[in-house]
Length: 211
Image (cartoon, rainbow, N blue to C red):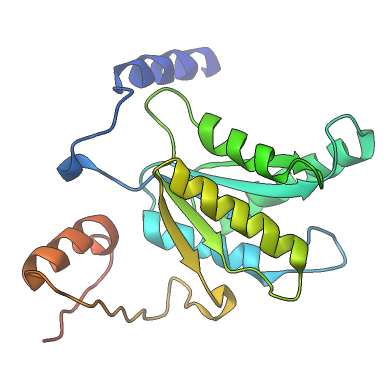
């Protein structure tokens, strides 16, 4: 069965054109970047909240990749074991939030932040199936290292022509059972904007337009 599934996936991927789609066919394919404390003793709610937001945005459709950034080295045995533990935890958390997709981890060092993030953004995905939207969490301003890593992600996202979403105060975001109120400053035809937004974000959720 695994061989059949891989053959089917390969056939489907080869049919996906490796070029930018027409604007009307554009759909968000998420790369969720997670920089948080990964340990059994400390529970950081930001990661789970980011996955929950990603699940609401995707509504169970399309590509979603959650990537945890870990300070360490791939040639260190303990770091590799820790990375596998984080990946397993990510997979379980994605299942809890009903976010269908893939989990991965990537190492970085003090001198490799920029290169690490740049390489990830350029290479992640396969063929025409690759993320076009980056979901970031606003960093803790009292943590210079986290701020620097956030800046690198933001810059690389823009350089690679990705749509960049930055969630500030992510732990205060509503979960899938709560209500989310959205505001938009509109300079063009309101009906066109609402229609475009609903196609990508609200098609799986109840949505009321207030005028």
